[in-house]
Length: 380
Image 1: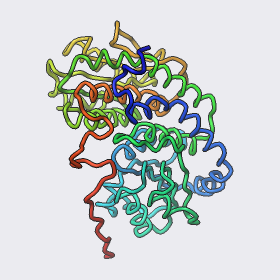
Image 2 (image 1 turned 180 degrees about the vertical axis):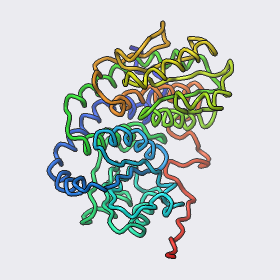
Image 3 (image 1 turned 90 degrees about the vertical axis):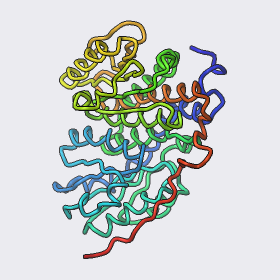
Image 4 (image 1 turned 30 degrees about the vertical axis):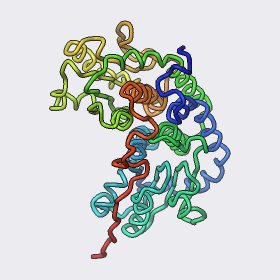
């Protein structure tokens, strides 16, 4: 393990928040367990309704929490679970909430102060006859948490205080909200939480591998994932783009989708990270694209992240294999897997000389989005 003082981003809030995530995950699980009776009382009547629709919403990284969780929740709960960004819900509410059916709107927000966060819940109340709100947020003082605190149709779940990242980019806030929603809707699972936390520690203990891969200094960085892992491919691409202040062009897609045009991005300056599914069927498609990519840009330009037994592995730094995750759905694997993308973003930021905690000192891009006008929804 490298000397902590020489790590990329050492001394920054981002590096500190990234590094303590396994401990924060255990704390998040404890919070959910402590509130289980309250959660059950709120959710049980809703989940008993056969036509209940669950909508997972948020903006930016918070939206990607829903993209990761939705496929796994739909499969386990045997009901409709959709991920719809607040940015889409606010701008096209009658399209995104076209069916007036009983709805549980699950809102994710680090601060809860982004203009769309509260607006999405207010608009849902306008266009739907029956809607309940589960708010999962890191900030008790945020507008979203304050608006829904104590409301009969709402429940606010706070993640650990340490998950409310001070740095520009969401790291522990993203993973804590993801872990929390899985536990809330699938039930407490101490064994899964411990396996995920241990896998996260494996990533952090081997962070030198991210430094070696980033040392290729790619101009373009592609992240691929299938099913729930498509969401962390998108999140990883955003992290690199944010923390390098746009200095590295990033792309994301699914293993199959990448061939349909986006593959044009490949050249000698491109590196690729593939998050490989633990599902044996889905993993076949991941392995196919890995073989194709290694033939196109070389073994050292393609990094796979997978759990033990997830498929063929290569040599040296081309595979990052995590142990102890057997039997877990890809949405659980996403929690430790995304640390690889976060470490690559942190390393690339440091190599580029960008101020990691404040990559946009001019204010061109803000930690909490500004400049959005929420227009009233006219009834017609």
